[in-house]
Image 1: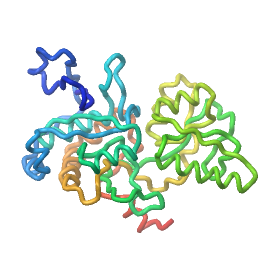
Image 2 (image 1 turned 45 degrees about the vertical axis):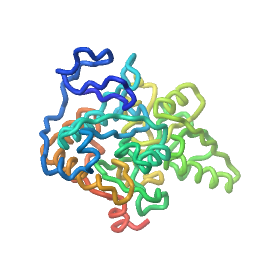
Image 3 (image 1 turned 90 degrees about the horizontal axis):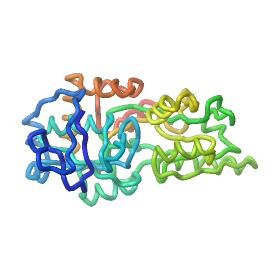
Image 4 (image 1 turned 120 degrees about the vertical axis):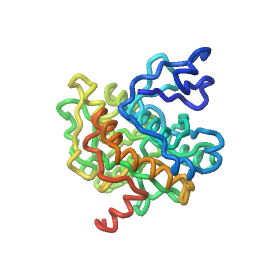
Length: 310
C-alpha cells in the first residue's frame, strides 16, 4: 500500500525511482488496488490539476480505519482513505497529496477557497436534510450507521440517541453528530434531565476520552467505532447500531463545493474503482463490508430522502 503524505511535507515520495536523495522518503507498500489511468477522465479534470499533475485532498486527521497515522512519521497515513485516494489519483493520471484541517467546517472553507481540491474523511452527505451544509455537494461512496462506542458491558445502558440522557457523550467538534447530540441535550433539559456533550478534535481523542472516563459514550461513524472496538482487546464495544440515531440513510463520501468542475471526473474515477473491483477490495481489506454500496453517486442522501420522507 502506498503511503500518502501531508501536502506540507517537504519531500513527497512520487515513485520508487525518486526515493534516492529524498531524506523523508518512505518505501511504498503493496497496494490492494491495481488501476490504470483513464485518459478521458484525465482530460476532464480542471485545468489547474492537469497542469500541476496533482491534487490535494483535505481530511480531518486520524480516523482509523480510513486514515491511520504511522508512528514516528508525522503527517503520513495508511488506511482505506489513503488507498482509495492513491487509486483515484492513478485513474486520473496525477499524484495525490494530503492536507489536514481539524474539522468539516474548516475543511469546507479551505476547499471553497480553492486551497485544496476536495475533502475525504469521509464526510457525511447532508444535502436535502435538516443538517444541510449550504453550498456543499458530495460524491458518495458508502452508506454508514452512526452508533455509540462504550465500555464493555455498556455500564451506562446507552441504547439510542432518542433515549440518551443523564450521561456524557463525546462527538467530533462541528460535526453533524455533535449537532444531533446538542439537540438531544435540549430535549433532555425539557424532561428535567441532563446530557453533557463533550467536544473532541479527532476520533482517537474520542476513544481516549472514553477510556479515561471523561465520557460515557463516543458518538460518530460506525466504521471508526467498530475499528476501535476491535483494537481494544475486548475493553470497548459498539451499541445502538440498529437505530438511526438521527442519521437514517446516511451516505458519506467526498466533499466539494456545489457545482464543482471536479465532481464529474471524481465520480467517474470512483466508478472505475467500483467496476474493476478495487473499491470492494480496499473496503473489505479494512473491514468496511457493512458500508459498501452498489454504485457511487452525487448527493445520494437527497435521492434517499425523496424515497424515504422523514
